[in-house]
Length: 114
Image 1 (cartoon, rainbow, N blue to C red):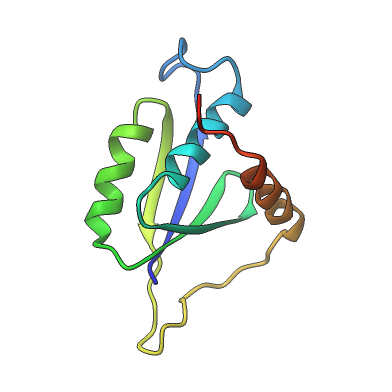
Image 2 (image 1 turned 90 degrees about the vertical axis):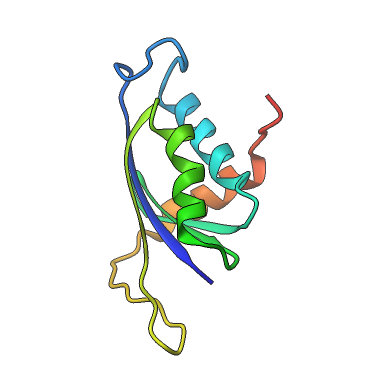
């Protein structure tokens, strides 16, 4: 399954009347990502960096989905993570497991109905 790496910065100057603070902006970001039709799961091992796993989809579909929803509010960088022929991800990391545990709780408690 495709995995995407997303790094982001929220800057109030981009759209200062939309969110009152970073936490509101992050909630919006997580809602956008979890609402993607092919969304499977998400991980966070570094601040402001997410790994999003989706079911098989065209990468341009994910890029086209995120651009209009994130560009007005965030500086961001998204890329597809390469995989080997046997499906292993080409990654190297030093994971902060506490961040990921916190994200998993945040996702469980996420309310995107607003």
